[in-house]
Image (cartoon, rainbow, N blue to C red; front, side, top):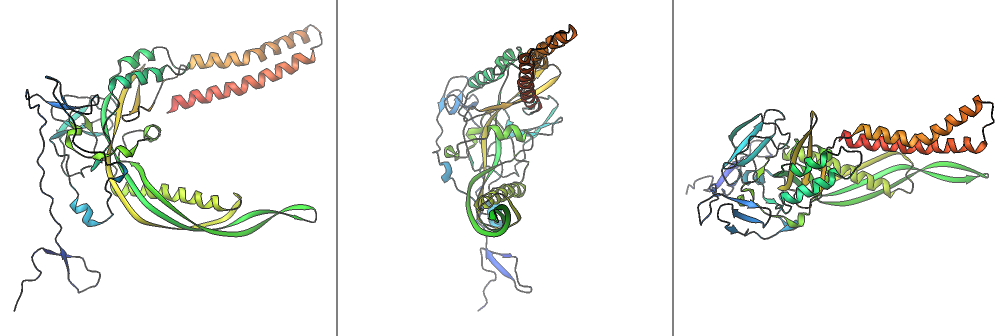
Length: 417
């Protein structure tokens, strides 16, 4: 009796043995999810996600709809690195959105079709082109909702701009009038277990014949580390240094992705692929494991260090994290500010008033210069210079030079971010 082969529901797959044909069950197809239009049930106005009350709110009649999702936190599902996982992944945003392409910094940002903006949130340029958002990108599975409001952002920024005497006074006014753009930033999270064996020659100090000598002895050991929710940014459009300062998110507040969280809010699709992000994550895991191995040695003075490293139980998530972006101009320069949309942590670029810094350093060196000038006048008049004047001049000069150098370095760090 002849039967149909392959059976219904099976498809051909790759075979590890030449000449052998292998079939596997056909992956279940995800049901197509229609795009969502967020309209107020009372007045048919456009609703948007509100950071004030954490839900959809109508700006016309005040209607509010609380989010239905429960917090899943770090228990949020993770995915293996398999072809089947990628094939079954959901794509698109789940709502109709348009894409903003900046002609200055090349950033791609998606926003609701009802949101009228012609400014890039990353660089502040108005040289943008609008197009329909592509639906072939992976859909995020989880996100952390916005908690911090724009009013809180202005307060945080005003305080931050007034936190150092090195900054121009006019910055306080700029802080109060700065517009903040809420935007969801793409991130990848990775889990893995790293097992490493290490071997190295370690320096030992021994006493021989009444003398201390250094001998080298081989040591070895093993390390096992579990990495949980290692964050890797999915965007290249933000300063890595600034993002590092504000990305302390509490992933215990992750919720399943719903298009309603993006209603009225911009979002960026990832431009760092899963493969590239995993390469970055492994490099960080390798470096941290290497440090853990070296810490196991009896001394940090070693040579011929080697390490064998294996990764297992790898998994990943694609998530969105809340961030406020602001760009302000001072003089001829533009400065970028980032605020964590969950914690309110701020980082950014600030202009330095180098005249203030110069006068401050001059003030630190003035006592030594005055004492030195007094000593020169005494010598010119044929008067012996008291020993105390010389000592004080040297002490004041050393202290002035040290604090002046520290002040200059601090100002330079602030200016170079």
